[in-house]
Image (cartoon, rainbow, N blue to C red):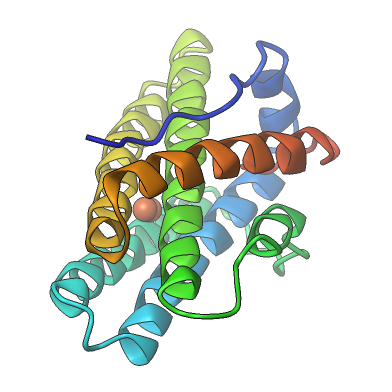
Length: 195
Ligand SMILES: [Fe+2]
Ligand SMILES: [Fe+2]
């Protein structure tokens, strides 16, 4: 069965960069969860007829909203405020590969969402490991538990895409998008953010 594989591995220097400004990282993470929930509901609005989509993505939006609330709680308990969202060059770069006509439009949106989930899974596990090594057990456990949810979401988006094209086409498109995602990510500056 076709499955998603990221085209690159995040380097060891990433954790120190990402966690240098913890307030900025947590705010960026909060907005990522919000956009994940919004994207799930936007697909529900535009593709209610796609089999299984409404049930799967309303559940997912619910989970992402719960992640958002948990990040908000962490920020609040530290006495910090949520910072405004910043332009998301990662998602915008990825979405430039979306083709205009269905079924390819929906296919590309689902697969790109899957790549975002898979990269988030990778980055959130690195945060789990990094905070664990730094002795912050609470943040470490939090990020490891979120990472496993995002891994599940990545698989779910690919499963929703399966009926749209043949297995061979799906494999080919996943490979193309893996290369695209790697290029987009490599062009972004490092900072205290998830992507
Ligand atoms: Fe999430
Ligand atoms: Fe997710």
